[in-house]
Every structure is written in C-alpha cells, then in structure tokens.
Amino acid sequence: MTDTSRVTVIATVLNEGEAIRRLMDSLVAQTRPPEEVIIVDGGSADNTVGVLTEYAGRLPLRVLVEPGANISRGRNVAIAAATGDVIASVDAGVWLEPQWLEKLTAPLESAKQRTGKWANGRGGKTAEAVAGFFVPDPQTTFEIAMGATVLPTLADVNPATFLPSSRSVAFTKAAWAAAGGYPEWLDYCEDLIFDFRLREVAGPFGWAPGAIAHFRPRSTLKAFFKQYYRYARGDGKADLWRRRHAIRYATYLLALPALLALSIVHSPLWLLILAAGILAYCRTPLRRLRPYLAGLPPGERARAVALVPIIRGVGDLAKMLGYPVGWVWRLRHWSQPEIHWRRHRRPITD
Image 1 (cartoon, helix red, strand yellow):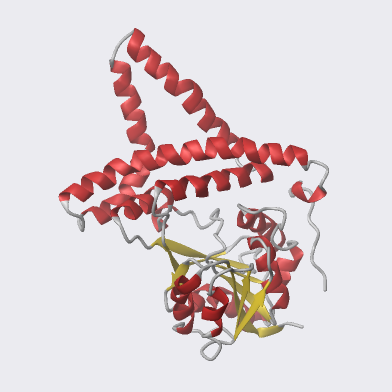
Image 2 (tube, rainbow, N blue to C red; image 1 turned 135 degrees about the horizontal axis):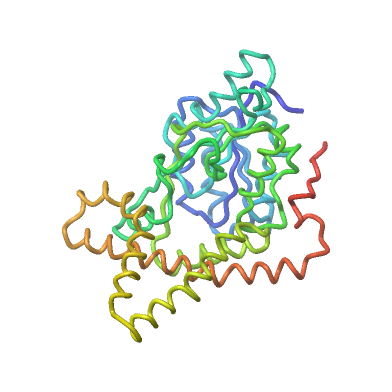
C-alpha cells in the first residue's frame, strides 16, 4: 500500500565504495527530507553496502541487495518496495543541491494540495512526472571539456520536449506502474524508453530547473568511449534515433572522404570547407566551454578548446561501432514482444 503524503528517493548502486558518500551526504542535507530512501545494490564486491548502512541512523534508509540486477531491474525493485506515492530517482554518481528534492517534488505536491488528487498533465494541469536537471561537476581540464561537449546547459533545453535523465526525475508510483516500469531488457538508454512511456500515460513532464544534481563527467577518453559505445548499443537494441545515426554514418563515411579527396585532387580550399564544418559542429560545446576558460591558465585553455573536437570525434566513433552491435542483438531477439516497446506495454499490477 502507498501513502500519498510520502516521497521515496530511489537509486541503484554497484561497487561505489566510499564514493557513495557524496550522494548520501547530500541526501542528509536536503531542505525537504525524504520520508523514505531505498537503494538497491546490484551485488557489489566492495564495501558499498557497508558504507550505505552507516547512514541508517541519519536517513529513513532501506538497502536491498539484488545480485545481478541491471539498472532497470534495480529501479523497479526499489519502486515496487516503496511505500510513498511519489518517487524521486537519482543516480549513485551524483551529489544533490540542498533544495533538489524540495524543488523536484513541489509541482506534484502543489497539485495535490489544490485538487486533492494527482493531476494528469493534460489541459494545463501539473504532470504526474517532473523533470529535474543536472550539471557537470568537473575536477580536471579534461572533464571541463568533456562536460561542455556532452552535457546540455539550461540554455539548450526546451522544457516542452526535454526528456529527463533518471539521475534527476520525479513521478508518481501510479504513473510508473501504468508505464510498465523501467524496461529490464535494456542495460543502457533505459530511462529514455521509460520517459517516452511515462509521457504517453501521464502527459507532459513538469519542469523543475532548480532541482539540480551534480554529475562528474568521464575522466578519460577510454572511459568516455566505453560509455558512448554502450549508449549507442542501447540505441540499436531499442531502435532509437535512426535518422541521427544515419546522418552520422553519411557524414563520416561519405561526406568526409569526399571533402578530403576533393582537397587532394582539385584544391586545398576544400580543406577550409572541412575546417568550417568542424568548427560549426563544435560551436555549441565551445559556447558551453567559454565560462570555464577564464578560470584556467592559458595553456589549459588551449588544451580544453583542442579537446572539444577530439571528444566529439571519439564519441561519434563509439556510436558508429556500438549502434550496429545493438541492432544485431535486436534482430536476434526479434521474437520477444517487449523489445517492440512502441506497441507493447504491460502495466504493472500488484
């Protein structure tokens, strides 16, 4: 049974060790404390569970151990165990601003106070789901460049179409159930599929830009490549963003070789066209990078700027390699109805 006066914060963890303290300390410091915190451990081999249990006296905490659970399974287990009607989801690798939960749940709670029931998100009403936001928390010059290249700023966001990451989102437990929960057949991009389904059953997301989670970008190109390879593999498994991936293949496999060939055969001026194209492609990351440059020494400024096109190129290569791998997996599992998520959704029932 759920309680409509309670908010449950959920997260999944795996081998976070001492690093999980950043998240836990920030949960302790919330101006609007959660009534419940449920964290599902996927079978950590380190001291993660031990560190979490240290917070049992400071938070209304339950730690559930589910060995082998992927992120989707972990979130579903946590939400199913929740006694609150409002779920606030966060990731292990973040820390939260003190007003994160207050601002994230305010649209839902104000609708409850006005109407006595959760609004359905239609006809101008507050939605059953609210999108929070996240910002980079870089520690090095490389991470500054990484955050500027891959993470949006508020200026980049259209609240009407923004699909939130599950590192900062709130929704009712009823909406989660109606949406069929997180897709446990997906290991990456699972929150996007959940967002699409949630919007379908609950209406548009509310927008809480002040509900901010701080997320540390990947610290090496190797880690970044692995991350984006997995993201693209998830895109292939879920049949997401066909057009985007097609444009990427056309750019790198057709347009780029053609411009290089023209510069060799006809005129080096074609290289200027290529350089202009690269600059245009990096324009948004460079705009995001600008506020950080003043705080860097001259040499590090140049390094940060030079890293932007490198990060873009590595990310694109990772996506081009990961996407077909995901599609091969999809074809092998074609007979499974759940992968055809656009037409298959099974609501969760008690």
